[in-house]
Amino acid sequence: MSSYCLAARAHPLLQAHHDFEHGFPVEDDDRLFEYLLLEINQAGLSWLTVIKKRESLKAAYADFSIEKVASFNARDIARLMNDAGVIRHRLKIEAVVLNAQKICEIASRHLSFKAWLDEHHPLAREEWVQLFRRNFRFVGNEIVGEFLTGTGYLPSAHARSCPIYARVLATHPPWTQREAVPTSGRGKSDQDKIQT
Ligand SMILES: [Zn+2]
Image (cartoon, rainbow, N blue to C red):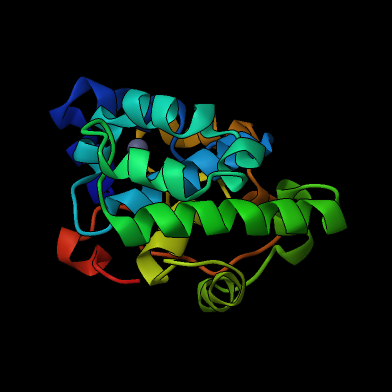
């Protein structure tokens, strides 16, 4: 069983994320942005730390509205740096705002962020990482891999022996529709996540 399937049993918030979100396809752009934001915020920390802060992150980052976060100014960034409910890491905060601006640009040219992802799918994991690095900030190998696994573009979100595996398959995530390159899935050590 993949390590996240097992590790998720450690906390009800992880279990809920594992059972109802992880690996399921995502249609909504703000929801996709939320997952990218969470992955960026996780770098160097545990996934549980980020999941526990999800509600306060949501409040601080305008309900994960891409458009609203894209308009954040220096005062908003200062507010976030003083908010104990968020991950107070300036590079992460600035990256999230810049990424929101970039997603707005992408959405204006490609209909939506989701459509842009679909246009590029399938890519090998390394190619996705290169694409994200060309377009976004703070998007290392692990962050991009987890984001795309969690949203169904790359396989291996769940072990075949996990009860959620069949439920994910039934929703026809992108990786089942066109072949993609396997990835290792969530659950590597936190150290692997420290990158920009
Ligand atoms: Zn699982």
